Amino acid sequence: MSFVRRRFGLTAAGVAFLLIMTMPHMSEYMVEARMYSWCAFCLLAMYIHAAEYIRSIDSGADSGDTGRRSGRLSLIHPVCVMLYGIASMYLHYYGLIGAALTALGTLAAVFILERRGELYSADGATHSRITPGRIVLICIAVSIAAYIPWIHVLKGQIGQVSESYWIQPVTLRTLAGSVKYVFMPAFENGVFSVICALVMIAGFLWFAAEYIRHSRAFQGRHDDKIASVICTIAVPAGLVIAGFIASLIIRPVFVYRYMFPAMFIFWTGAGIMTADMIERVTGTFGTPDKKTRIGIVTTVLVCLICAVYVCAGVRSYNLFRWEESRKAEGMKRCTEVFDEIGREHPDTLIVCNFNQMQAILWHYLDNDSLLWGYTDETLIAEICGRSPIVMTDDPVKLKEIVSDRGQNEFLFVGSGNARDEIIEEWKSCGFFTELLQDSCFLERYYANIYKVGFER
Image 1 (cartoon, one colour):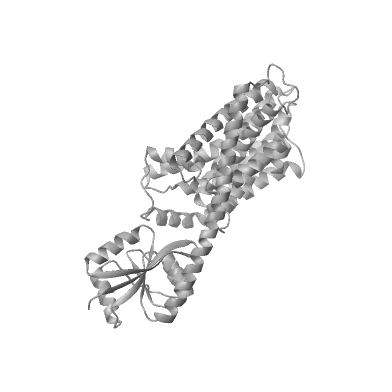
Image 2: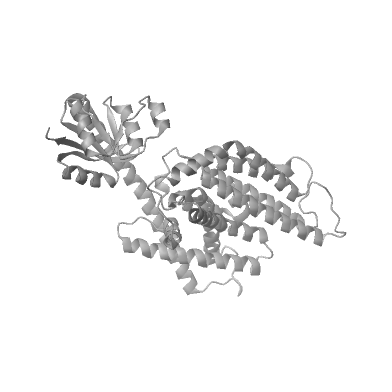
């Protein structure tokens, strides 16, 4: 946040930090070592260094220099943009889209500012063959070359995701759902959540329009600041549009959580614009004149919108505390059930309907297991040393497998909504079920544990 503090002030840095830490869905990623959080960090760092590089060129454009400085400092920001971009591309394939959008935006801004510097210079002469635009082009070329070894992995990941049943077809509702994912807090009252989301959306659009108008009219030419804020909106919007188009052309490859890598950039921009309105309301610019005076109605609206931001942030924080407490209780219950299974059912077959849950179970229990109605992942089988994994989706075949073991019952660790359909299918085929424990939390997945039997 030091970049935001230097360029936009302490208030902007503080508000941006609070919005990032309390944004909706942040609680889902605060304690998990996943690529989403690291990718979001790398994209934010890439954006910051790109903005600093553009600012240095913009400051030289007025003097006709276009930021052409010799020495180490002139390369720090573009090199950092390149390194953080490569890191984000390797961390997540939607990080690739975010990095590409940031790089293209940087290249466009640099070329525009270079042209302005040449027009403003006395003789229009080019002072060096190594221009900022060429430096950016070189960094982009190096980034592409660095990503080439990973392309075959990218193809495999896209193929694996696109073949998964949980990737739903995209429609126009997907675009509205993306906005909902960004803004809607998770209050228990759904209507109140929708109202808060609408207020936050309206406030964000209003603050953005006011920020651009105020920067142009009352603070002199601050094109670099305006461009920085526009980019914070363009990167997540471009990521959604790219995912939407790819899903329409190829097959569905977009879910809402893939927006998360761009969220740090987005909420940084929201914090800058919100802080600008707060400073105008509180009179940070000094004694307001006719140009900057804020009316009573505007002040009330700003306070209302900020209050909604605060309420949403407090709710996100409380949700994080509640979710972690719930996970701890669920893990405790799960451990107790597993201890009981280890004592009373050491030879009982365990059936899972999710391969990752099955893989985690192997760490806690030595029981043989079967995968129901789900495709085996070779990597999991190799890591866990359980290859080949027995799979079936036929109730008759399942009865035969259990009967061949000399048993007439098994345990079912059911994950997700599909477990209810599986239970109903088994009941229609002569199985009877008993719920042993519900809402068990195993590492990061919730599951219900059932005892299932049948007549031989």
